[in-house]
Structure formats: structure tokens, C-alpha cells
Amino acid sequence: MSTKSPSDDEMAPSDSRASSESVNADRSATTDGSVDATAASSGTGLDSNVAGALAYLLGPITGIALYVLEPDDEFVRFHAVQSIAVFGGFFVLSIVLSVVFGALSLIPGIGWIIGIVLGLGSFLLAPIGLVVWAFLMYKAYNNERYAVPVVGRYAERYATES
Image (cartoon, rainbow, N blue to C red; front, side, top):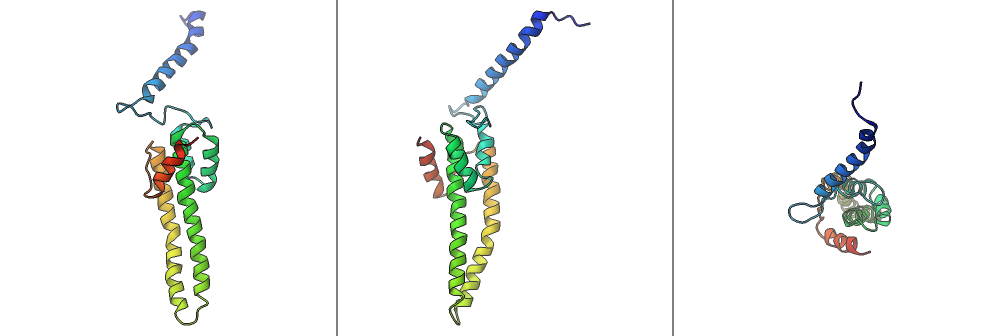
């Protein structure tokens, strides 16, 4: 038999909510005054670190979606903008290399040699993109605001704009 009274059962849910709120409040501030990204949930209902990692999932597509859906979460917006810039850049670079490769292959003599070199560069773009993609998702999931050189400062600027 249980020794709990009905009043204990009625109070249990509110006590657990209060304790989880205090845990979240304790997790939200770190010793250096920064905010822990896992403590705040985003506008999508996801933790900020999960939403930040998902910003990289489909490159510019999820980057744009999360940038629009997260007007208040700077952590998610930073990773969304960085995803748009980095993987949008990879996409544009692959198209440019393909067009230049095709045009140079039409030049008699030396064109095919230059085309082969550019083709190798285009061929290496996919595995490099895969490594960058996995690395940035890992960093975002671990609540790190890793800024890719050159692109990161623009991402920082656009993440803070509303």
C-alpha cells in the first residue's frame, strides 16, 4: 500500500516543474557570463545547439529556413548564416569550376591539360565539403560558435541584426 496522500500527488508535478526551471536557470549562465546555448530552446522548440547543428544539415536550404524561423536566437542565426555562406559558396564554386572546365576543354592543345587540373579541383571539392560539413555540425552541437575564416565575421554581423 502507498502511504502518499492525495495532496502529495497533486503537488508532485508542480515541484518537478519548479525544480526543472531552477536547473535550466542554473544552466543558462556560465562563470564567464555567457549564456549556455542548451538552456534556451529556440523558436522551433529545439534546443539551440540542436537547431544550430541542423542549420548545416542541408546547407543553404536549412540555413535559410532556420534564419527565418529564429528571429531571436543569435546562436542559431549565426550558424544559419554561416551555413548559407559556406555551402552556398561551395555550390557556386562547383558550378564555376564546371563551366570553366567545359570551356577550357574546347581549346585545342593545352585546354584539355588545364581542364584536367580544374577537374581534379572540382573532384576534391566534394570530400572537402563533407569534412567541413561534419566539422561545423559537430561544433554547433557542442555549443561552440566556431567562425569559419572570412565567412565567420559576416555571419556574426548578420546574426545580430534583426
